Image 1: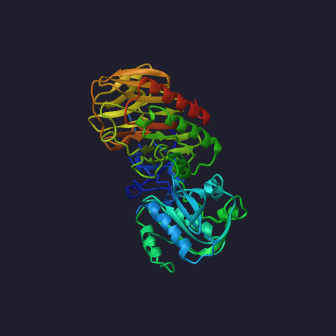
Image 2: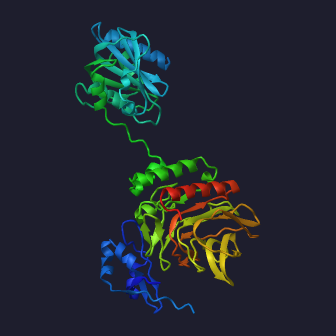
Image 3: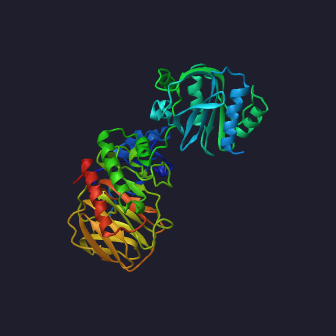
Length: 70
Length: 428
């Protein structure tokens, strides 16, 4: 799964959970990656127009680390 | 004294007692069916009955409606002090009265016309209190519009009528149909989308499955703001099952593309209180073929009962279709080779799920009858309140029905959805 994501700290993840990213009512859905860190996807960052959450656009992107399902 | 008698007496009184020259006339509107009829009297005698005006503000809609002619009436030209009596239904607005008044006054000023109850007018006219009457909104079935200045007008095919009608305030907006509201709310103006959606909508309206199906998401418009709307109830509310998208799914001209990682949509639909117990249908049109992966495209699980579709999973064995509808146990159908096109997880029987998957009936025994208490998600399973088993299959549409479809309805729905997908260029 080659998806670009941005890592979040717990406070940031809590802030974004259920928060609208744009005027359509679409919301962020922070989840944990294989390192145990919270992430949101590049698509959520690109869709962001909410003035309160524009800070997500400055987050560095990296490739998603899948959960270890072994 | 009844309405007609009062009307006649008012007309006679006005003609005789307000000092009009003999060539002047009184014009009265009276109720005729769903409209109002213009009655012209002269010196107390009815000289013309014509100009039937439909009630309720459709004057502009019909164009020059004041030119309708009763048989035998000639063209008249009047200078008159005009009293127009307009019969209105309780609860209706006064658009007709206002517009008739506007038509009448347009040739002079734009002074606002009030209305008053015919009983009040009757009393005042009989008491010869004709000037400066204080009008009040009517509570009864009759309204009187009083025009306190003269006009000149010709009743039939006159040059003045188009000018008067052109100046009539536009009728109140006709409440949009759900379909038009859908287009308005989604902002869709592309004929290439409007046409197939309209065909689908109208075709579905004539199908027996339609009353069972409160929810259909066509995912047209190419963005989240458009894709969220339920075609069959296009209000931007949870109660209308407007979707809320979560996570990083993409919205394109081909529908909703979840990412299999954190994207899903909340339908706000629960079977409790909506679906018939032990019956129902839900599903989607998938445009993506995947292998055997533990991903769910629609549904929920409350920990005891479930309704959902996993189109191709590995549970004990690979390539199994996992169906649940009001189930306490999973039902599997093996040998799945693809995950595309229309899935209908349908239940009409206490003992089995009778699904329709990509052109074929699929029957799975199901002895439990229950309802899931959780809201259904799309592109993931609502697993006891948490989104899990995220799907990456692009969806051309999704739907939920409150009752199970018959075999014929399953086929009809499949036919209509396939036609829609083809017309939208989404068929796979």
